Length: 401
Image 1 (cartoon, rainbow, N blue to C red):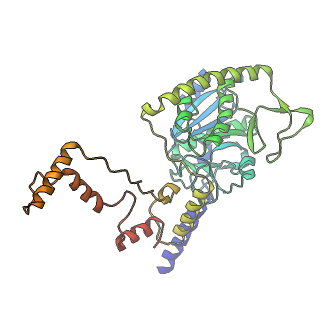
Image 2: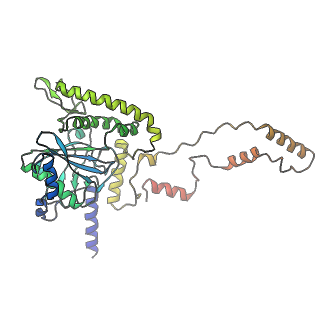
Image 3: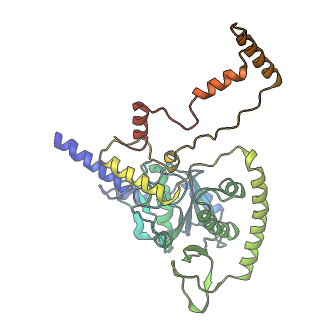
């Protein structure tokens, strides 16, 4: 019995540290052949879609939505289905390192070999993280999935019923001849209002780059051509003179169709106007930004927390963040205000009484003097009592035993 419990504990720890490690444990392939509901197929036909026409997937973390878009008979894509994401782990922002529990953000291509009909998470497909952009930025990780079972450690997890439909969309598109489909994973819908809310976020530059691809799809309703050069995503660019795009190299001379350039400029002008208005009204909107990861440093902290938790060490209930670990700054002492005239008179009267050998009256005990005495004994903001309980609390906060 002891061996069984120990074996189970080691297995659970291994699965935890690996994240969404999609090793198959049983052959349940028949579930991968379930067909889309007939009502959904009829709705697709009404929009000019066939069962086997190409697809594209969009994911929005903050809104908790996964969308399946499908090509119509005119070549443009339209929304075929939308699902509430059951669980995704981490915060807004990209995945940085193995074990940081972040669900990826970016543009990913899904090929047939990435589909897993025998997944231990019901059904799944591998997102393809890290892609060329992730690798050139030194980001690491593996086994990042869209899967069922409603359990996530860096993946996008759906219910089993939802993932059966998403899987069916992809399966049918591949059988119809699509060689790969695009997954676009965003922190939120890239609207002027949302971009204004996150203007000061450390991930803002990265999100602005993602927004370019988001915009091209909004304009054309066709998945953009995605390349990486100069350590950035570039979209719908055609390299001149047979040039190529190198993730870490300088972007080659490239061009776009004139009509696409004109459409993008017009779209961006409208966006800039709405963005400026959203910035002015952001303070009164009342909608606060969601938590986001603060780069590699915080990702490394979370990854270490994950490893220690997997080893059975006593750690905090929630993963650490830089915000938690940044010490609060003590308040700067403010100059003492000058006493009001009536307080001066009362103080002088009190001194006169003391000089005469009598006890000062209640009137002579000036309110300002009482306030000064209270301020002298009150702790400064940010200081903590130096006792054992507090040190234990801090030790627990930083993941100590």
